Length: 286
Ligand code: PMP
Image (tube, rainbow, N blue to C red; front, side):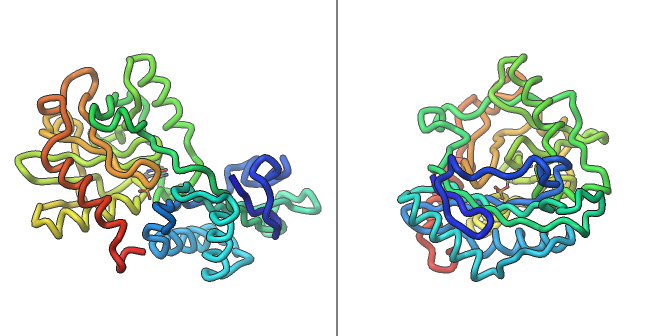
């Protein structure tokens, strides 16, 4: 792996930040993850749009502009010498040199790193699909933390993961307080019923893979909408799938110990997985 920290490239093992960084002490940070597939960035423009929008919303200033960030990421990938790579860019509030508690005093910090592309689903698990538990823990998306700002507030998600492990599931989806599902640790969720597809519209990160899935389904003439999705319809779904940059489109074949559909990846999910990987060579989706 390779990293870029405080203006210089370094080996990932040497990329270390101060414990006084507000990103570490107060989770005052945002990040984005993009992947490189067969030597090519996938939807980098979309990820940079979301990253810079988040940086603005948090009132941070990135020391590099969009083109410079793109160049830094590309150089990290080159130095890491990876064909398929997981690429993370981070902005933290940084360290306040005077130890003040005023965020305006901190010197904002840009960090990037590249590691091998990490499947959330191991290749051998892809056909079998994910087993998911619906947590008791609710997704905390208070108005004060905008969930569309990609953030490291994962206390609820991590608590949910432990719930899932205790129940023998691979991963988890958290409900909101109103009887709807939200998202999981690093992925959005989609439900398929009678050939129609839906994904939660609020209280979730607007995932780029979620967007790709919505676009590809629309292109295939399959109705796919973002709207509230209830726990009841999640349990009654014909197919479920998760979307994330790090894992692509992942079939969910078991929910709270019960089979989803016939317990195998469904036809719409399988078709979408194919379309998703085929889209990696589209010139308009670089
Ligand atoms: N929800 C959360 C909470 C996430 O952290 C992520 C990705 N890290 C996603 C959804 C999926 O977003 P994307 O498709 O952009 O990777």
